[in-house]
Amino acid sequence: MHCKMSVEKALKNVEGVESASVDLLRKEAIITGSVARGILIKAVEDAGYSVPA
Image 1: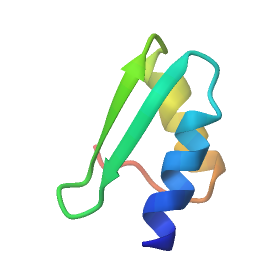
Image 2: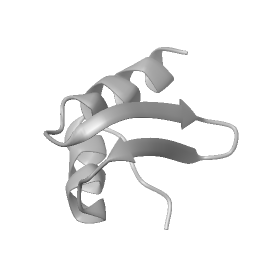
Image 3: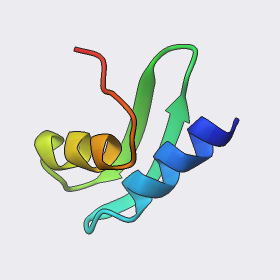
């Protein structure tokens, strides 16, 4: 659960993200807002996590 919260926090801290919800079992994040995919990936990686291809 800690990983989920950490990734959500990293995504929510990105300017332009209105909300973020992470599902670890499905390996997906649902984001609302207007942000380029690359910026979101960088935020997750900067938080110490990897993004599946």
